[in-house]
Image (cartoon, rainbow, N blue to C red):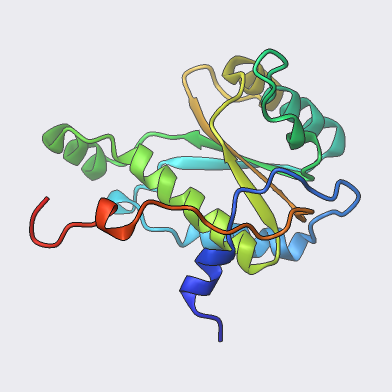
Length: 181
């Protein structure tokens, strides 16, 4: 059985995919099942995940993520699947807790579900990249998302053509403190 640290070490932000290879529906189903199991404040699950796998529509979605001026995210058309994460209202107890503690729990919960999606994808041998850069208005129109809803993330999925890269992270002492800051 694989250790979690091995899985976490294999997961990377992939920016090149085999555009000729579809992701098997059973793998998508398991990735979504892992997302459904993600914890959230007061079990609010304040999100909706829109799976975009129609080739024509996913190319239009990919167009909302790229910028010619900044030269970014042009790889997204290669990915056969986009998972769009839309913020939903939290349940009553999570909403009250957010007010009392001055924390927007849906953002935290969406971060957790995104981690579950990307780690489950890695476990299935599928690459991923989390995107926050997209034209929200165009994306909302393409997918019929109500105007009052926020689209927070687009997670692209596909079979990576990139080699596994060495992770470059801050030294553990820079991000962890024991019993004090």
